[in-house]
Image (cartoon, rainbow, N blue to C red; front, side, top):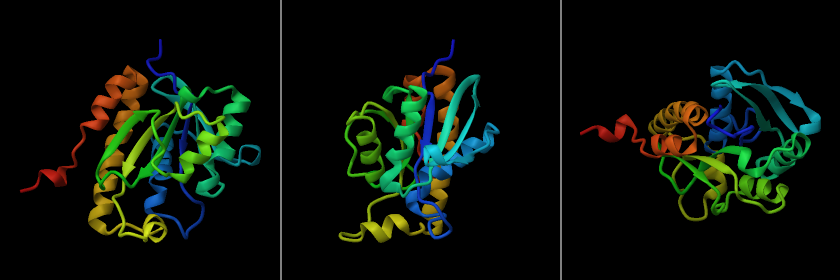
Length: 201
């Protein structure tokens, strides 16, 4: 019996070379790495406003989606998939960047607030205002006051990038554990992560 009930994983970001490697694209970068690891092909499906794939993660069938709308309209894609395939909010995992966490941090949580993240707001709205879905939050740190847009759409400095990539690698192992042993074990593993660079003297 599968440990996880997750049926859809959405990785948030913006489309195009202008946004490639940006802080705001951490979620879709992780989704693409997950798709590569489990050999799940992502193909554009206009009816779902995104690139969609279906495959197995640790023996459980799951769909992956990268919404190709702007980040702020991610709910168009996620909502369409949830409606068509009858996926409940609690069967959804969203991968996204998180300003409230420093680079190199990663957290798995269920429900709770949206922390002002427009992609999450759009998804919650598409689910009838429900916020009871899983989120995997990748820390990008806080910008200077009044600099939010240029910060999230900008590319991290090399050390920040290294920390974020280390957290993404850990998150991949955590998603595997989620499907093998369920959300409690996965959250314990993911949320206790500290990058190697934080251990340096």
